[in-house]
Amino acid sequence: MPVEKDSITPAAPVARIDYLFSGGRVGESVEYTDSAEFIRDVKEQNEYGVPMALVLYADAKGETIPRDFLRDMDPPLQGVTVSYMNVPVYYESLAYATEHDELSAFSASRKTNEACIREIESAIESHYDGHIVDFGAYKQVIGAFGHERTMCILANTIQGCKLDDQFSNENREWASGIHIPADPEIGAVMNISPEPLNTFTYIVRRRYLMKSPLTEADIRAEAVRIMKGFREASEPNSPNKTHYSVRLSENFMLRANYVHLGKLCKLFPFKSFCLVGMKDKSGRYAQIRADEDRTKPLRTVKPPSKKKGIDR
Image (cartoon, rainbow, N blue to C red; front, top):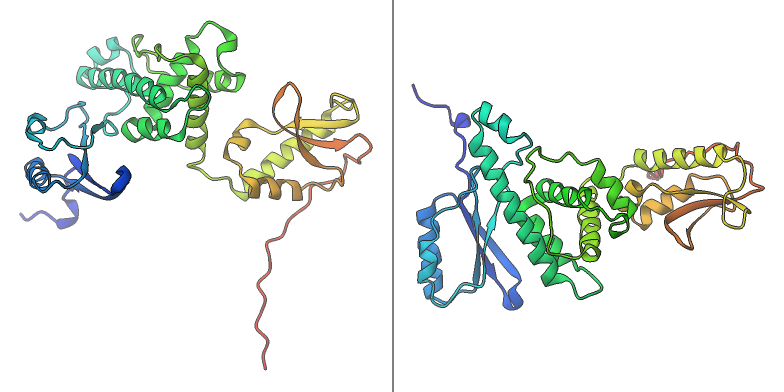
């Protein structure tokens, strides 16, 4: 009986060639599902001296195609990395994996966790100038391991840190809510000082949240939360006791840009409404004068109407 065309599952890619422009920028990428074809093209392009970097895709077991062919590359390639995006994060314990015949998945995930830790350490070391961790560190780690595994490693690292002042309260609060694999040897980032690791964690968290842009409903929900804070305050709570202040939620601020903040401000009916920072306090605060009428409702912002054409 012939197999229907739609029921055929396409083969998973095994590797990719990134063709490079001057300066190392990727100009074109080609994925391969056949390892023999991939190796043949790599050797052929290498003979012509084509600038390129390779990405090998690990399968669900954490294995890649054989790498013996790399020894024959002359001139040397400009980079060979491994993508572990196809290796699922395994959340159960070793005992569970043994009982349910899932040891291969457990082992592959543990091995990949170890590789992820080394990649985080390498990326921060390469992209930290003593003051700032640049965006390249994020791209290097997430491009190879994805957000889920990276966040598990970072959260496990922060949860295991005994000194409260080594990571921000926001990062600690976030880490406490992340589900960590039950493997007691999941590991943690140990060879990087807390300061750049704290910054790197913030970058990962923010970029992950930015995958889901704020909607109009999200902005209004934040406005409702702030208004509730204004109304529930028994007395002005600004440092000089002249204003009511409510801190914007970190989840909102991590995803918000200037357009979102502008839309948030338009929802409030107060002349004195503003967004401010406070000395010795982190975050951004919504603030109104103490003499404002806090019973006023939020504004309803109507979408711009479409102008109809004029009949002549």
